[in-house]
Image 1 (cartoon, rainbow, N blue to C red):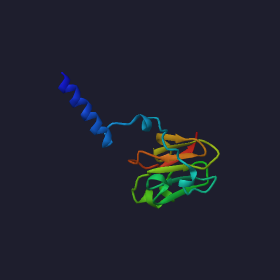
Image 2: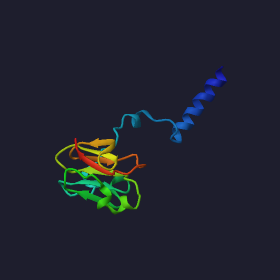
Image 3: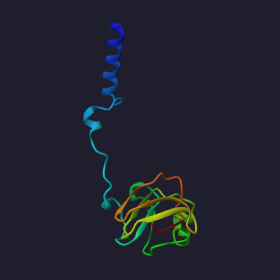
Image 4: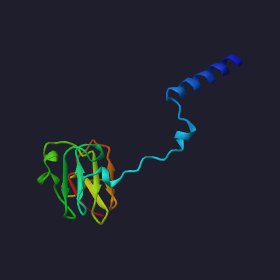
Length: 128
């Protein structure tokens, strides 16, 4: 039994040394905050991006709703997914994977944004 306990302690120590076990200090560290500065989105607009963290191609709209984002978003027309977004409007925005507000996939409050799952397109949006 004593040999097993020593082996367990040694395994935990090695795993901690190589990052396999979270250290108490890192477990208490808060998750990173998404800041608007990371996203290039004109104030008052709803923006979507083809890459994470506001990177890649950007499409933005000032109007409150859009029934088909492919009308004026080249990366959506190219069948690329939306990986991040920023809501610079003054209202919560709901977004959908289908045109004409079908198949709601999420919503984001005003002044917020971030990374999405990245395996779908936002084909329409409107205020909540």
